[in-house]
Length: 141
Image (cartoon, rainbow, N blue to C red):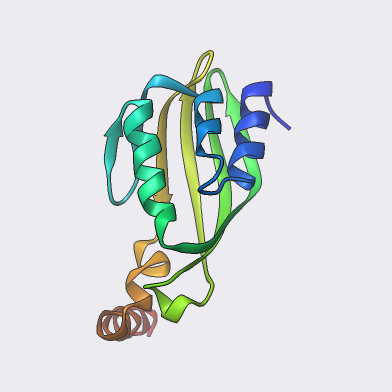
């Protein structure tokens, strides 16, 4: 599939939960820069704290990595996340598709996630969800 580092990354992410976040240090450098639609984080300890916060209210979270393109210290991973959060979608499972861009040498130095925040969050908030879905329907027609 990919380099040993990316193989380890995929294994860790596909089994990640609140009880094994210490495994992040196996794949991320101390100076990791992590960017997603919500945060921009620098440093491994800050990233670990961010994930600890995210997992606090999760009933369930799983990543399924379906594709990977790797070339000269860079990679793009295509994934699906399935999660259940007590405050989103009445605690029922939500499925989100996204991809991650990684830059690495010995460990991963940069990680950026691309995800549709509507699909991930906004569509599952009562009033906001109806507005977002309505806008998407108008664009389609």
